[in-house]
Image (cartoon, rainbow, N blue to C red; front, side, top):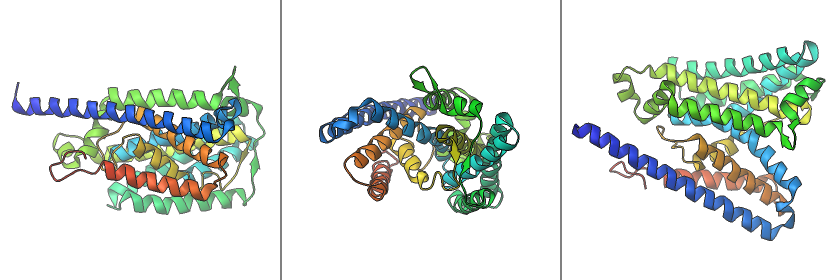
Length: 325
């Protein structure tokens, strides 16, 4: 076996062990936070509150799946809240005018178009994805308010409501959607050539190109996936509440990015897991829910999320030798 092959295997084993240890630590943090909020607020462990946490987590998870792909490829998407809103609004209007199937397809198409645009503008014009998606956020959010005429749109379709906002026995459909999509996203990321290309592009774009990977196509793909994930989140949101609001998803980008980074995905690219994102989303939802129960509003939630992102990135910053701190 060559020295290069041996080194690659050693790095792979090291990354796997790091990922496992991070997931264990993250699970421990979730248990400790849950215990803290249980002691400080008796309502925390109630069945109703638990279901509320899971529902809230499901939306962040769906958005986090797309964001995981994007960040692993060494890009970022801050437009997901706006894309979620315009996709939901278009879906709601189409459902009321044509029917649920057409509405779902219309919402997904809108998300795909915005995601594809983000990717195309990033790779073709050389504009950083952060800048592109800031612009797209404004376009999508403004379009949602224009198309809806700044009014909430009540969705009149029992079939849609039961599919995206109902339940199967005691389990909310919202949770089932999040779990199924997570399994699909995880398998695609770990077991397919596309997933390997995403990791390779984020780890070293130049090396990936030398090995024959079309990195531009990979980045367009990951940002398109994020757009579709945002559209699915919009469908789940209006399915749960029965109404599409142009302001829905406002500020959710910070929660999603925090969940993905906390879950072990490197903001520098090339590293991350879907399981980590699931745990990160749960941790963020527990923090948000616990703060509300203790009487702290959205301002405190945003403050905590910001601190968590900075801390998570700082802990994963590479030292001069390229090792993880």
